[in-house]
Image (cartoon, rainbow, N blue to C red):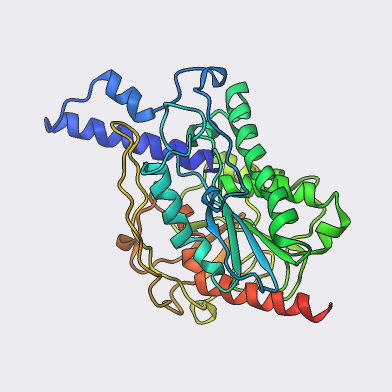
Length: 358
């Protein structure tokens, strides 16, 4: 996850919950357990056990490997953080773990927005979520650099052996957005690759400082191509932290596709209910048996209004009990699901507009 403020609130909520149980006499939680709740890596990055880099020539190295060889436009999707443990700075990509389960959850709840395209989503040795709490430390930087090296390798393989000159959409979320923004900088160095970018959807924590030096313009219409769309979703009662206000999020409204502004419920194409749940197994045996997730349910149209305020995309959720945010009012995990139909339709519209000019 990119939102360090959200991570802090999540951790504080975990500790507060444990202390409530202690006060109620329901469970004993000692200092060591509280430390485990934080689950920071308690060693240097250099001391991480060695891991094997993914071999992107193998379809097994991809969380999604598109099968439509005749697709006019491909999607390169970079998943967010699903590794919440502290044994390592980077996920070892072991199967049947919480991180593997979370990656499947992300494919079902996020990448499924692009099911009309050939989607390629690499597995990569993502940095643990806690790398974002101390992002300026040498260990955190090293962990994120390793993660990006995998993403960059996957993207190079994608361009050379899979995409082969077709137009493409760059998409991601949270940690995936962080790496996607760096890819965007790299894409801009190659005119041929840059000219094939239909659009970049990079929601989930893109702050103003993160797009400094990026030449790709923000999307400001529903049919603009070669642009960047980003948003970060919060409830109307969420209280922003100072860091979120001093370095505001970028807000391209995913209903109107304009920078800033609002949209009422009547304009909202539709959300899709969450499929399954994210695993927060941060302690104990890291084993989550594989569970296939069902197909997305039918979209619910006209579900919420959406307005950009101080960089945040504010939404009015009519049934918040059906959502499971890490912290109340922070709909970080639902940046795509809340606007599933909006993003799906918009991607098709931008594809049509791009192909029309060829």
